[in-house]
Amino acid sequence: MTKVDNSWTLFLDRDGVINKRIFGGYILDLSEFEFADGVLSTFGALSSKFGRVVVVTNQQCVALEQLTEEKLGEIHTWMIAELNKVGGKIDVVFAAKEFKNQAPFRRKPSPKMAHEARELFPEIDFQKSIMVGDTDTDIQFGQDLGMKTVLIVSKEKTSVVADYTISNFSDLLTCIE
Image 1 (spheres, helix red, strand yellow):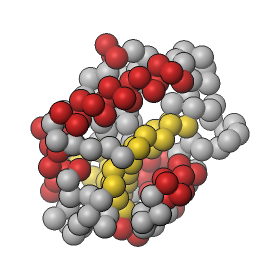
Image 2: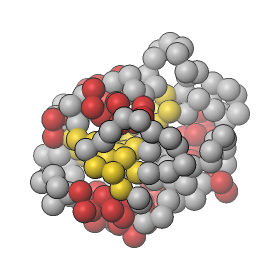
Image 3: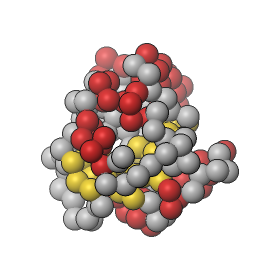
Image 4: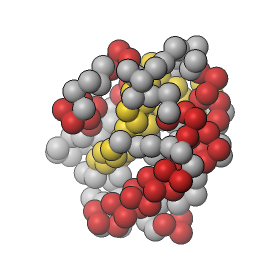
């Protein structure tokens, strides 16, 4: 267990963590966005334990022209509003919209989105941060920055070992005190 307080930051991936992931596809419309099991029931209690909550998500669907930046922004605005309704908070969402291996190289596991978060919120200390994801790139992102890491197991095959492995979002509360 990791002891957290409001000096800690929670970094979350989106697809597979906050919402159910569409394997082999993307969330292209609000009608396709479905919160992952346990998110709505525990997000308020979980996010209240942290000083900052930051979403870092790879969204190549924008580069593929399957989704506009405006539509992606609408999805994120709606997601934040729905989480606010259950007492949760998200301070900011960073989305890497480029193709894999293409400039500006913000996609996880690159640390760029974390550094952008710290520029916006200078109090962020990566040593006092937790990264929650469902892929190797999510866990590698956190590890490279010195964060505690939590893997939510899914159909995604992973090889990077996280500090904690859980089966759903609700189990996050068991990783912290």
